[in-house]
Amino acid sequence: MTAPAYPAARAVAATVEAHFGRRAESARQRGRDGSLAPEPDARTVEAIIEAAFWASLRREEGFSPKISLALLPPEMAAQPLLFERRLALAPAALAKLAPAVERPGIHLGVWRDDDAEGGGLHVWGATRTLPRLCFVLEVIEPGLLVVKHPRSRDPGKFANVIVLKGDEVKVIDEAGASLPDCPSLLTSLLGLGAPPGISFDSVDVLVRLAVSMRAHGRGGSLLVVPQGSEGWRESIVRPIPYAVTPPFGELAELMRRDPSERAEQVWQEALIDAVEAVAGLTAVDGAAVISDAYDVLAFGAKISRRRGGAQVERISVTEPVVGGAAWRAHPSELGGTRHLSAAQFVLDQQDAVALVASQDGRFTVFAWSPCEAMVHAHRVETLLL
Image 1 (cartoon, rainbow, N blue to C red):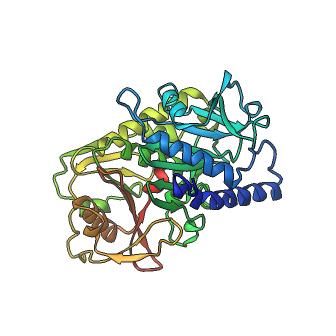
Image 2 (tube, one colour; image 1 turned 90 degrees about the horizontal axis):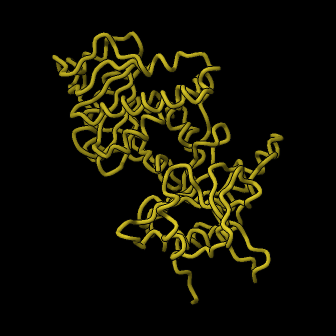
Image 3 (cartoon, one colour; image 1 turned 180 degrees about the vertical axis):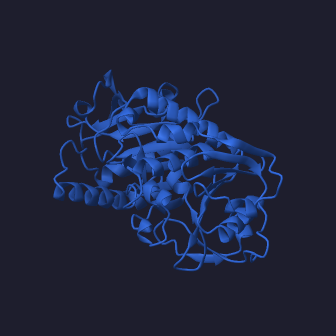
């Protein structure tokens, strides 16, 4: 063959190599090069993406493969599951293995076979633990792949690098969070941690809520308003069908716990359950409302324009991908009633943030932009895969 079987794999290979090279060099300059994963080269990246893409299009017993491939030698994995015989990095082999490793947190280990001609790649087993800056390729659904790596602060979470969907390629813009009005949620999703003065744990809860909202697949809206403020009620139709009195504080109480408790497994499991419960409220028609201290105030709320307030006409829209310039649009161009009402709410309540999940998987963060003096819509679904 004179051309790659999946052209997008070759198109992004050098970009991926450069990204991991920059991150590794930055870690070395900060003296954090210990236990870094090996840097992927372009040829290896291309081979892994190509094999995973064709595997994603196969079906085994009626199911499409969902797998995660991690590039590392077995000696860098803690308690790895090792195969007696190495498997070829081939679509058929990956598709057959998929049912055993499709649960979250399990990665198929891929490494080079120095004894093979040309140093071919093989699958040596599976692991739950990854070294820092480990190249990971996740198959989300047929034809949809995401290149990512563990975050430096929390190796159990990942920062996306590139999203490939068929012949469409989106390279995440690492500088996308440098905008002065960038919400802390977006900064964290880009894998850059929380901005100065904002709790990392607090931002992490919003990220968890966003992921859970998107996962339930029903679409929904979540309004985050200042703790102790009642101004948000001016933008809600009353009576509220499911107002919560007193505020439901399970998630808020967990976040008030001493930091020493947060490292315990019991606290982590309780946080997951609480996040799932709050995100589940967004599946009800209308918007869920929580304070920025994570007390649940209402759900099923209908948003209306505040009396005497202006009607939202135009918003600024961005997506944190390379080459994605900001554009102006009417909120209805992003979706339906949820997007229009969320934009109106933020226009009226400029100290609030609105998170909107669409049934088709799109996810938008609406926040007020003082620099532009208008509502800013950040399209972030590429960061939640």
